[in-house]
Amino acid sequence: MKRVAVILSGCGVFDGAEIHESVLTLLHIAQAGAHYQCFAPDMEQLHTINHLSGEVIAQKRNVLVESARIARGEVKSLRELNVADFDALLVPGGFGAAKNLCDFALSGADMDIHEDVFTVCHAFAQAGKPAGYACIAPALIPQVYGQGVQLTIGNDTDTATAIEAMGGAHVACLVDEIVIDEQHQVVSTPAYMLAQSIVEANTGLEKLVNQVLKMCK
Image (cartoon, rainbow, N blue to C red):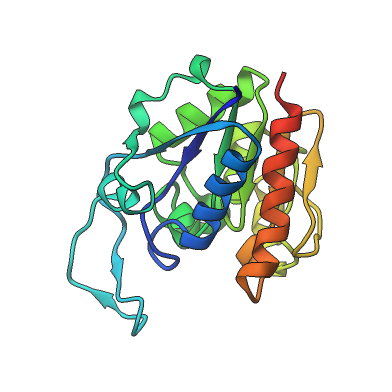
């Protein structure tokens, strides 16, 4: 059975992992007959958003604790992730990917990736193990894989420009498609960067998961 590590970034589209993307990713891993284990950095998230009003609220939350909501408690600290135990990596999107896993939401092309996140993602890259990034999470890819790596966040011009400034080769992509970089063994899809419904998001995510599993050695 193939084993997949999934990195979550909290719980909720505006300050954590996008819940639909995360759940659909886990569903498609399971439906493909593979096993998943969720991980998240044990850290305070950037801020907390009231998802009803969209306003920032004065409440501190922990990314690992919040990720446990999606994983039904079955989540481990990212520092416990041993790349040798897994065949592939998947990273759903949501603003948490751009606020907690890195600071792309604040710094754009000058962003830094959280140390634990970079260590894990880079280890998968160095091991030649396939990885998939969805929605805004592909913003991590240039710093993880280096100059010229192909990826997509859909067709948002400003985001694509920032990604290319970091050395990525952005490929415009429809909501239901994926971009595959065979050389670097990394796959990406726009998901809710373009999706207007859970059905639209699902199509690309299913392709992403199945492609990453297909690439496992």
